[in-house]
Length: 123
Image (cartoon, rainbow, N blue to C red; front, side, top):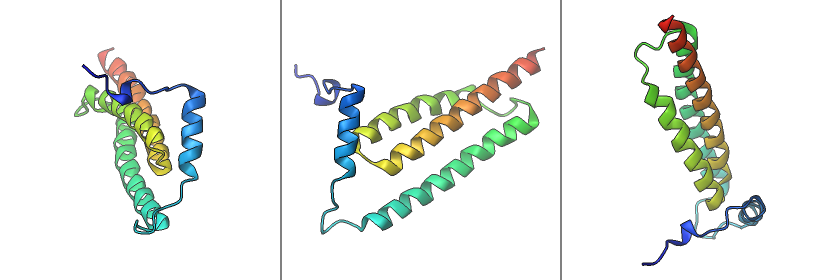
């Protein structure tokens, strides 16, 4: 049985940093979409997604309630965002790295607020 290459990769800080630097300097292919347009689409999608998630976090903070909010919403988002940050770093997609770091931070804030509100409601 062969171990997938992704599981045997060197994930040390220096290797990730080297890979990101190398990927950041790669030029786009002639037949590919212009990087500026691709990045613009990525940043636009990031803004929409962050506004959506931030709206939920703000609503939770404002209401100081956990009613209608699943504990798994932010727990799942934390795990998924951490995985996507790692994946996008390995792929060298700067837009995706930054987007998922912000989503990870938003999920962390949402989880903290959820736990705080749940503790207040239990008292």
